[in-house]
Structures are given as C-alpha cells and as structure tokens.
Length: 148
Image (tube, rainbow, N blue to C red; front, side, top):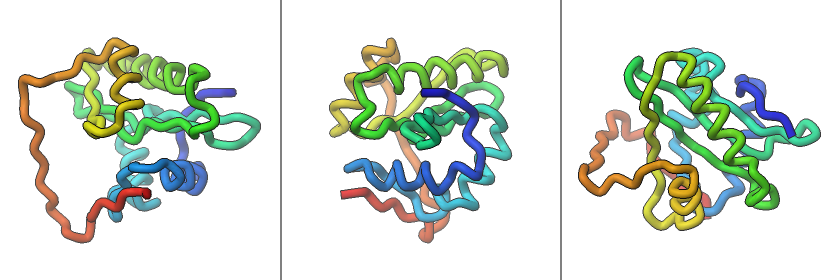
C-alpha cells in the first residue's frame, strides 16, 4: 500500500469508492469531477489516497482556509478496514496541513456512523458537544445523495 497525493486523474476510482460505501453522502455539484478538480487546485497536494496495486482503497479530501484545516470524505474500502489504512492516511493528511502552518484540524462525522466516530475518538480527535453546526445550501442543484 502507498499513500500519495490525490490528483484529478484518480477521480473515477475515488468516486467509485465513495459510491460503494453505505451511508456515504455525495453532493451533486461539489463532488462532481469539476467540483473535486476545483478543490484539488485550491488545496494542492493536501488530499491523499491510499492505493494497493494501482487500486484506490481509501481517500481523504483535505484543505484549509489559512487558519483551520478540514478533512472531508475520509473513507476506506470495507475489505481494507482495520488494517491501519485510515490511520496512515490521517497521519499523512495532518502532516501536510502542519507543513502549511495549520494548527487545528476539524471534520464532520455523521452521528449514525458508529464505525467512523469510534475511529476518530481512537485517533485522538475531540468530540465537540459545545457548539452547533450550521450550513446553507446556496445552490439547490447541490443536493446530497446518500449511498444505500
């Protein structure tokens, strides 16, 4: 297994990975090839994938606003879970953010994603119950579809 920077040429494999994970939320515009391309250009060399024999087995979209880093779409193919793939990707993504001068990283995990929430606690991320999360959908075309 190797961990490397995600490039737009990885999109089809990454999207297939996302599409195969039950409960994964995919946004129509933001997660399109064009949307991911914009994200990668804005955050060069911060997003990572795990690859085994040329097959994408995990991904993290990672970026920052100059102050705080954020991890998005962290996932590992089911058959590769519990083998350190997620941990290796997180360590690499956080290391890359640290090199950019970022000192705090956040992420969102769906409340009903027990496996993911347990993983983040194990990785020393702090659960925050002292704040409310809000978002505003500016474009109605950017709906979220959940993989069933």
